[in-house]
Length: 113
Image 1 (cartoon, rainbow, N blue to C red):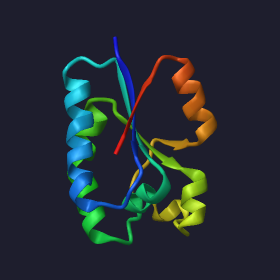
Image 2 (image 1 turned 120 degrees about the vertical axis):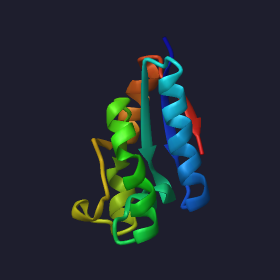
Image 3 (image 1 turned 180 degrees about the vertical axis):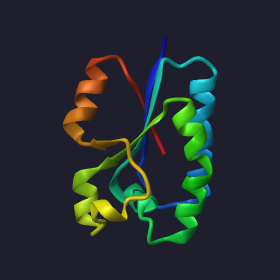
Image 4 (image 1 turned 135 degrees about the vertical axis):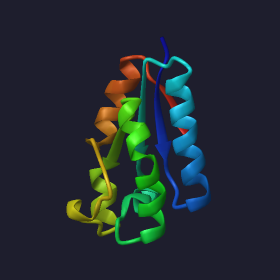
């Protein structure tokens, strides 16, 4: 079965909804595992100080949890963009590029938005 890491790399509210819907569609269609990773400028989409982003993500949290899609935030990017852990809307795990290398070794496919 397929396993995917979806890297969301830009601050783009129009794409945020599409990326979340895409991750849900992959999982619903039989993917073994889907991880949604917010990295580079994409980490800004997890900043709960932005009500618009918070609303979009909150609307999907129940589905993400139900489908067991993990939301990951990049620790280094959070620091770079001054987003403290308490200002992250939601995360299951902390993401790093070392983790990404391990996931590739485990057979995960990388999709970037």
